[in-house]
Length: 104
Image 1: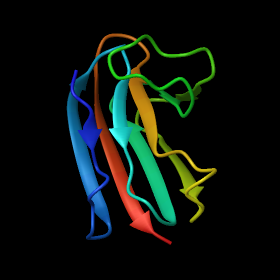
Image 2: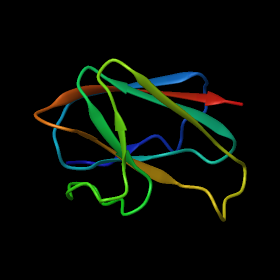
Image 3: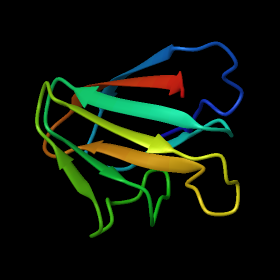
Image 4: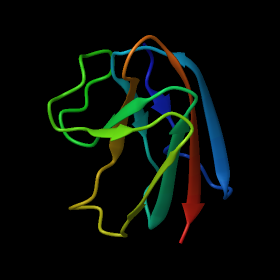
């Protein structure tokens, strides 16, 4: 897998579509600054913020997102204590994933 690098995103809202992500971690790097990140998929997903390593198995600490539902979370300004990347994976099989970045 290749890391999806969104760190240089400068126009908001920004939508990124990731086709056919499997059950291993798809790492996504995020831009700095205050953001709202929304994640959805056409199949059930896992999302993790710790233990992120592109192509690895999902860590034990993860969140389930049901198919066709949206997980939204806000990230603050602080560079020292916020996640700079996250991992997304399909719970089973593969999933097409949508990520929306918004400045808040």
